[in-house]
Length: 277
Image (cartoon, rainbow, N blue to C red; front, side):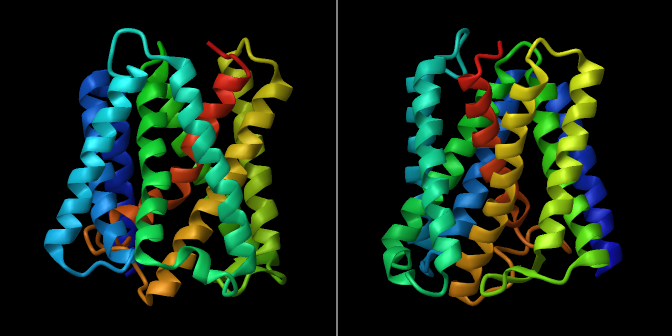
């Protein structure tokens, strides 16, 4: 299983890097939309839907919502609208604040979000802003590298958490949701994320002040942990280990997007708020 996981992970990384750096903005945005709809299909099952026709209907509605977001924000046009994009991402950030409460309260408070319609709505609050964040980032002059940075940031958080958690982990972070995660792993992932971000800032010679940059990265890294925990909470409530079986050794698409789905909107919103061109 470990060998299969490593091989799949390397193939996914190579495919993602090639797609992000080689595809034109419109093609990449469409690819992001396809991945989002695949994740919506998996999320519909996590929400409690078993009828495939109904799940397909949810995906159709999701596609229409993506189209509406694209028209409203002009993210696939010549000049994306930062004001409209900012409002959508602020709604997503507000959701993640509520999600933190849900995770810390679990298993109490499930009546608030466990109903199937509510979980379907949560899927939209997670996945639609993620697509918008990536589409907006890619529309920037150096957008492909901003997206690569987000993926690298999430990877740094995961790597730091894994090794520091294995070496030092003693205190459970959220035992009711994800028993394997520890506070030591959390801090290790956060530190490595900030080190990674500092190195990128220094190499790239950004016009954005270092403190502002690190503040944006800090919130994005924190969100990545929350994204992982939220999906773990929903899967635990549903009684499944993975969101799907599309990716050998990795589960489903949603299993690969859990941390990214929180980090990307928060990162894009942070850049909009600090007014980095």
